[in-house]
Amino acid sequence: MAMREMQEMCEAQRGTIVREALERIGDKWTLLVVGMLETGPQRFTVLRQRVPGISQRMLTRTVRHLERDGLVSRTVYSEIPPRVEYELTDVGRELLPPILAMADWALANSDRVEESRRAYDESAAQLAAAKQ
Amino acid sequence: MAMREMQEMCEAQRGTIVREALERIGDKWTLLVVGMLETGPQRFTVLRQRVPGISQRMLTRTVRHLERDGLVSRTVYSEIPPRVEYELTDVGRELLPPILAMADWALANSDRVEESRRAYDESAAQLAAAKQ
DNA sequence: CTGTGACAGTTACCATTGGTTACTCAGGCA
DNA sequence: TGCCTGAGTAACCAATGGTAACTGTCACAG
Image (tube, rainbow over the protein chains, first blue to last red):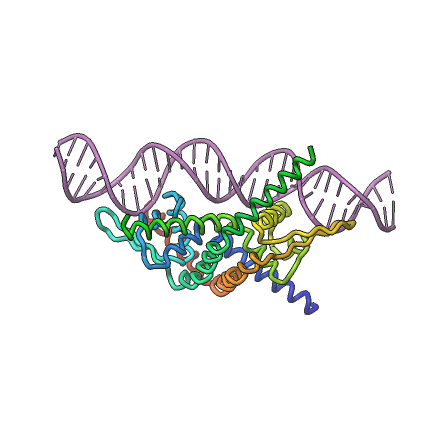
């Protein structure tokens, strides 16, 4: 087998691993929830308030997935009313720097993205009008 | 208004901006496609081959969104057969380091995640069996 | 002793998104 | 005449996400 082919296979395999990982964490809420756990353990309701717009169902699903993947730990305190705390594990905490970097990117570039989107939509509308 | 409230409002607003950004880039394919554009401009078919498992439709949709948001540029060469090249813009390139860091994280921790998932599913199955 | 509230969910249902397959367009070539 | 390529669209179905209402347990108010 040629060197070239081996490299390509290897790259495709890496791509598959990365794809599988991003399939899990690359959904609408996961990155946000992990980011919100930056400051330490949080209980369900607090987390729900800190992640703007998430519903109860989506939050439970998201933390369940994160727990399954070993990125957060879930601790139940048998009190009344019940208390459940979620905390990043070591693996989860290793993911924090890139997530925070992406959050910084979002804050720094949100206006540029917004502007680009407006321009794109406008020229698309003009093209559509020209076709008429 | 108390200082505390102002801080909380500010945090919620930041959270919203980050959420909106992650809503765009945090889907199944976007991060992967951006990552694959690391090495320079790529044409459609090559990109499709390098992103394992993506369909034509999903690739077009993903690059269209990225173009709309100003993260990639799309250049059409009027040849037969047609040639279209996608390239990261400056804004897009700024997103590259966190994405590559996440890819590294995925490669470094995929086995740990896999193991955690197996353990979780097993204990869930045991619990279900115990209930019977 | 009936009602209300908090917390951490779950269930049922509908809307939106993602995936698969087939088709298009324009020209070159057998 | 028919088939090939590259870069997509269109039509259709499966999977995922979102909304609203319900659950269970105990404390406390009236």
